[in-house]
Image (cartoon, rainbow, N blue to C red):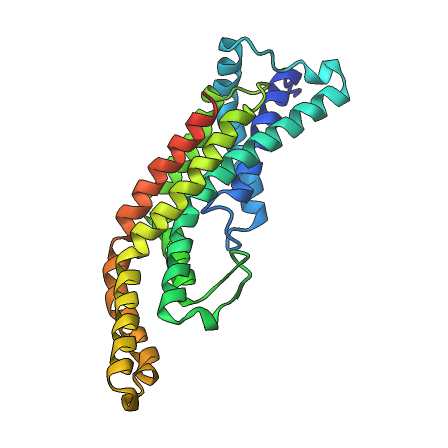
Amino acid sequence: MNFSIPLATLEVVMLAGVRMAAFLVIAPPFAHGAVPGRVKAMLAVGLGLAAAPGAKAAADAAGVRVGDAVASGTATFLADLLLQVVVGGALGFLVALVFAAVQSAGNLIDLFGGFQLAQAFDPMSMTNGAQFSRLYTMTAIVLLFASDAYQVVIAGLVRSFDALPIGMPLDLAAMAQAVTTGITDLFVAALQVAGPLIVVLFLADAGLGLLTRVAPALNAFALGFPLKILLTITLCVVAYLALPQIVAALTDDAMGAVMEVGR
């Protein structure tokens, strides 16, 4: 029994799979070290097979010819593969930039709560962070899987073939605008998550400073560390309970950023 696979179809599958693989390596939750590389590779191949017909139709509708790079030469095919790596990596970076707000909020809580001295390198996420930074990052990853938000991320990646068909170069101006907006939104979102607790900790420091000025013999700053730890752990529960809604909103923002690049 002989099977014949059209070379053009195989090329489209490979190009779509390469974009998927580059995206999965960078974008959360798949970029976490707990997800094996083999799983990422198999998922990229499966998604490439599933998205290939739609990607071919979107490219034809946009007037972009795909499936002729192999016939045109090895250099042309490798250039198309490199282009899909760049596109997938750029889209994954936008998604990672949006979800970095959760980790940044944890870093702010660690900084103002006095936990920053206990930071260590996390080989799973390849970042430095203390207790709340790791807690918020792990919680966001768990919520992405538990709430099926990862399916929204994958669906947005598949829809990227409609917004940015195979063979069409990445709009660098739109990408730069998306990165600038993403960095701004990152700081805003991090302050929105950790802002109330930061204000309380700042007022605690100010109150201890005033108490020291009024009664220097009390040595109020000796009580500062345990007091700030107590306030951080007590009030962080409120911000922690809001993480499901925050992750859902960040998922929508991430998909919006991915779609805007292709416009």
